[in-house]
Length: 226
Image (cartoon, rainbow, N blue to C red; front, side, top):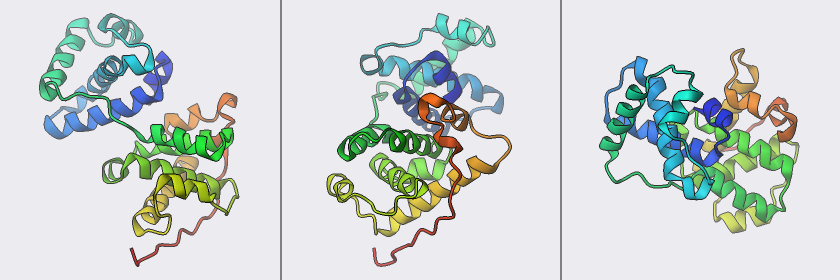
């Protein structure tokens, strides 16, 4: 989904919402492995429509058919869209994601471009972990992605403003666990041969090649008092 969203020029809001729909749909409906691709594509389609007022654009069935090179017929695409819409009914709404909080926190810190891109990359990597995506709040994922980015960039001092505006306790056991999980995903993405699309996406110059930054050996202390 990430690669398709990027290819079509849709925003990260659509990506995060698509993953949310995809996970929710699979938790409600039994889906064959052979149908996962078309399910993901239709989740992108529905998300683009749901968020069209925010993203200033959306896909249509015809556009999706052309973008996929006729991989699925228009009838197949239309039937899958109806199936997913029927499953959710009128409960498909825009959902605040970690990227929303990330933009807010970075603005508070003074719009550091490198920090923003690296934190965005880590936020996108979190979508690969069902445990992270379902267990932690979007604000916690955004906050922890920024904290991990500070460590990766060699900055050991966390600005007081970040904790004040986020109202998140960096010393809590939950946040320490989340930072550790994000760090594990970051290291894995940096070392495995078949890298996730996000790594390629954030290795480009317009994103300051942040995914190419080697992960340091980080020890995250867990505070057991909270």
